[in-house]
Length: 309
Image (cartoon, rainbow, N blue to C red; front, side, top):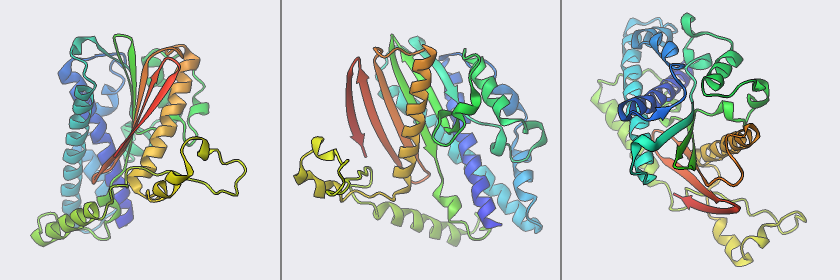
């Protein structure tokens, strides 16, 4: 039961994160092409409905009240995270004139599993994706082709920006640590519980080495297909072996990169982006504890990879 609570709160975080992004777009009055495609599901999504849908699995009334507090916490945490993240991202892009920033494509999911079983939001998944794509000028797309694992329709947050002919693809794969650590229904008004939770978070951050933001598989020397030595010298291999490969945010970065590459190939095939266009990829693994990211810049035929920790 606690595990289900953790999963559902993770979904609360995801939809709130994307609502925060949409709120920033609205406040900044950025040009966009998604119209009101997200207004309909959001108009049917309310705090009360989410709390009721999640708390229905718990018979104890006191537990239901506590879960209501958890839902409010994750809505606040997700919304603040999404709003701040996209604001800082656009500011970091160094684009001085907001009126010239165009949101060519924005994708998030307020249906399917993120609907929490709310009747008004339950729809056939391909129809939801088709509506999002068509609202932004992509007609007759083979939806099933891009719904498999690693394809861009599986992304939690996907954004394509354009500024004076320059493009940026932003993909964020979200997760929550707090939810996976829930083993019982904890009262958020209990000071001791909050202290223990804070200590857990601080200890996690302290446990990270300076290498946690990057993982490289150096392969084996016996592997005839190993071409890594053509990229860097053998002397560097032992240093790259120090990087962690089981870090949760790092795994999320890898997933985000997969979605970004799938989306880029889709955009090329649709003719919305040309191979000669200047483009920057930003892929992030975002959790409620840390953020890891990879940036890749494409200028005409040149690719420049920048690793960020």
